[in-house]
Length: 396
Image (cartoon, rainbow, N blue to C red; front, top):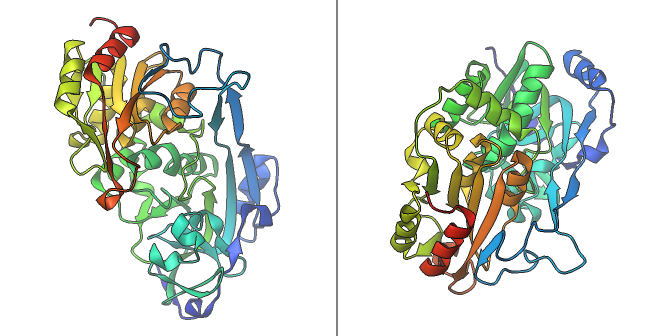
């Protein structure tokens, strides 16, 4: 693949570019034409808007779906205000003669600016893109410059992953959605690009049949066209329905295995959220027929097979629950959360995937983030936990 170096790029100042700054086209055929035509316009296509869905009246009822410590607001829904589940929309954009910076997955157009999907983290919002991507420097407020010349490749690519593509859950639920969509709908010759991948990321791309199309970048690179989505951002908001396609495609190419039907996930060492007396809690789960599994010890394919065969899953809030996408509909799920750090993403994902979600709140010691390293511990009452398992799952 021929690369040309551009000695002028380091002199370009990039302002902020939003999806709203570009014209919107429809139908999708017009967007595809803009991508395929060498002189096609820079445009946005809106696949679906963000939207909220009201939970049924029993969606967040203590003793039915909510257990453990007193639930933090707004988990216990106030009377008269039905709880909502937020599902994330999706928009795509095509930029001509654009640059992909693999450290931050920033997409920059020399003529238009830096796409703001790379600018929504707390650090970058303070104007310090260089704190997360040393290939950039701040020239002035809301203005950035690349520090060295940028090589160019005369091809059209789709970024894989996003600003936090190293996160297992973000990679599955967000980073791959646009890549798979565009690879299959925009026609031949559309490549994929991003940073060098971890082993598990390579395995997932291979399972999706996308491995051979991927180009690993070690420095910012200029392309004829870049097609990306608003999912490739720092801040995770809510799952997108398109994620179901990722899980279905991976499951379709893996053989079924005879594994445990009841699975409790064990978080790996070094995690910032520490469950106190984990051994006692896991022993309670074992009495109800749950096998204790650390997903990080399994390959990506083995994780998919494990969850595909499970009918009941227990897990702490975190990346391991991203594997719920591989579960069959109607699987029962018990998420363990700290009462000081409620998180609705797994609940929204379960709604999207037609899984039966429940939550058990443990009691945190102090405020989250106050301990060294930003971590915290929390306790799960073994007796209350046993009563919850009896209510949610029953005897094995």
